Image 1 (cartoon, rainbow, N blue to C red):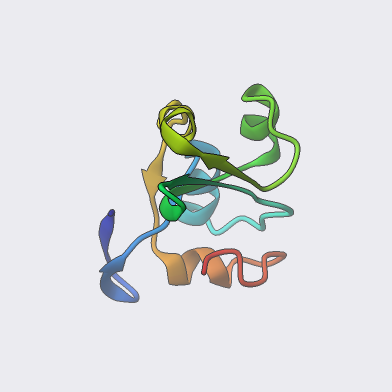
Image 2: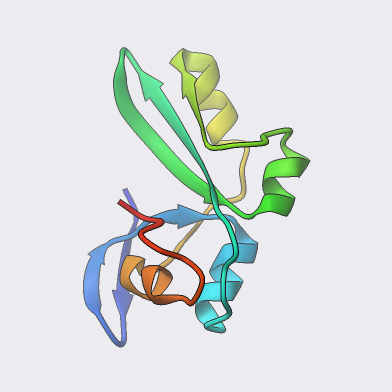
Length: 100
């Protein structure tokens, strides 16, 4: 699980996002949409990453999805993942409650 120290919000567990979304958070640019990819193992949530539409398209994902089992875990680790402050991410214009 990722952890960040944000200058504005302090230290806390951080969501994982594609590099494009990380850049948007750093530069405080509005985010129009996010596609969430979750992996589960043995019926339990195991990993999550949020992608911009371009990264989702690159990985042939068209909507938020759940990837089960070993294959799902293998697939979710194929994404380039960066951690961001969940509060900074949720404060971006155009994005409402992206991170749970």
